[in-house]
Image (tube, rainbow, N blue to C red; front, side, top):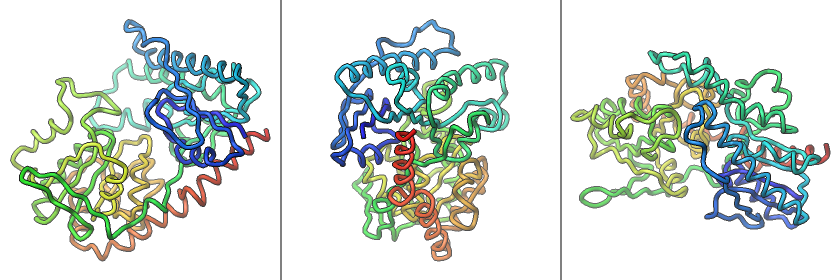
Length: 409
């Protein structure tokens, strides 16, 4: 089978699927991307770049749309070159988020296209009106409606769509639901598993400290430390946690940028703002900001975790939550969608009010105080991932079966 993948940040959601297909000689796998610094065995990368940047003076509703058009145009031109070289895919697979798949059918009209759809923008019931006290301005509704131009273009092009969770699918207009199928990318539970041998060495001002699973370790992971992933609530909960648990150490993974939502107007990071706010009440000798780390270090941090905190707006579900559960973490998570699709309070984790640092501190503290009582929740967290999101037994077979169905019409 000949497969064409498209994702600007190779391999994105397609790491496992592309790697599996590329390892088998009966498949020819080509991957269109903007990245130049990564490879997968058996996968041929074709790098594209948009012809120019977005017009600085374009109407702000249309910035994402023009960026998507530029990406889609560059992808289509690369696809025409592939076609001229004799490569005609049997199936095309791509993420819709950056416009890349919009014009593929203009090049390969008879090849089925499977699109990845993560989030449909809406004014109510998701991220925009989630924060209490945030005023909704008249501009927001029209802006979000226009932002969905890319979603609608993609839905009009694909033969089938993929959503990673039921809640994420539910946000799309009902008329498109028959087109969308809930298939998760998958968690490799053979790699992401508990380990008593895990060690994490942290740099300190006067040396280093190595933490193991025998220590009291509170962990938190996000791509960037920002409100969408509950960083303010997490940090505001720490003074109480550290005061009640003098042996506790906190390891925080994430950068100082902003992935979602607006940055602070003064150029400060949210970490700087929150640390300044808590000045005098936060024992920074026991709070370790480790920035962005390698995957092996990330995994070791999960494996030594006593309590892992995951907080999110109603938004795209992070892989890190499912990986934390697969690693056997005791997860204290926000009672928000789509977290509640995965965690049931008291069965495979503990749920808290996203906006309540005191409740977060209370439940983290209870887990630190009685680790043995939490072992059943840890075991059930891992079992949940094995039963519903395991890469090898569930998700990858679903994806492969779907590709075969698409190829067969």
